Image 1 (cartoon, one colour):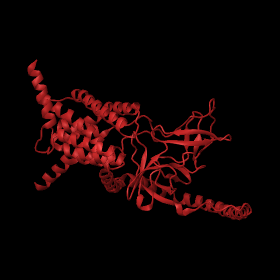
Image 2 (cartoon, chains in turn green, blue; image 1 turned 90 degrees about the vertical axis):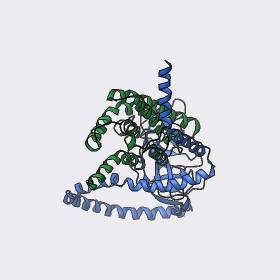
Image 3 (cartoon, one colour; image 1 turned 90 degrees about the horizontal axis):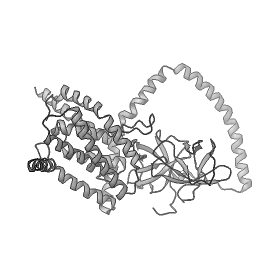
Image 4 (tube, chains in turn purple, cyan; image 1 turned 30 degrees about the vertical axis):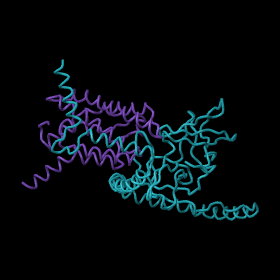
Length: 170
Length: 280
């Protein structure tokens, strides 16, 4: 029984571990060798999905720390990724408060709002307050592919949730 | 109408301020902290700079460890494949050794000739190896926005911001951030990379601009310049940062430069400890 409990805790921590791993390792979701404009922000998908489905698994404090780590590894000004992730958390929280049951379609549409707000903030802060310059097209492609591939990860995370954590939504 | 506005404000406030059993911090307070950290970092407060340097060193080391599986699996795969090709490889290596033996004799002759010619020219040997540092790439995360790598040598070894970084004597980028035990190198294909270069027999001057893609572009060339393929591009050194004549790559017909060193395949690089003539 105790062993089962530990396993359940490990499964429940899975999304958070994945989030930390993606931020700290040099594993990335950019396939620019195959398609030069292709890049996705998997962290935003993970945060949004689990914020809507199981907010208990994705503490905002962890999201904040993950953002800081991501800034250090990527070389962005400290705090910018945290801000962008927290905006996604906020939209996810708001959607969860307002809706009783969510579907892929509703999650996809609301994710668009979260993604646009988050990337707009990222783009404006980095271009106006730091020495770095990132063209709008880069952010645009990233937003498009992240949004476009959201349903695939939605299904994958749903399968994970149903198989290892439990089918009941938050 | 007023009810729906109330609903909105309740949901909005709740999303910002609510704390649950597993949410120890409200999103609002974390957003405020993130904004403060951001502006402290951007405006370069000394305390934040020092703290950032320490955090960088720790995170880069952890990141290097966390990325171990990514490095190990491809090499394991190639090792297994090579195990099955040992006999064939052995024969090929024998041929290569024979070839190199012949080349070695030729090289010895050329070295002697070179030394004699230098004596004649009274030229001093400029290949001083004490001013270079071999550094291992810790992290080469492929960001969609920034192209940079983290190396395992920092200010402790005398690395300073702006120093050129090469591999096999070909330019790969420059140091843009130094910590005590690590440094960040901005690669030539980064969006923020601009390097004065020289090319072709007329010594045409241009700026090599990274675009975030694998091939940086040549800009500000003489008016009416026509691109031809396979023209070697070298650092002009006009910025006082890079060593003049350091090879970079070859031109393509589209005005891009095919870099001699693939920026995605760096494992060891050389930092040239050149005293900066410019302040950054």
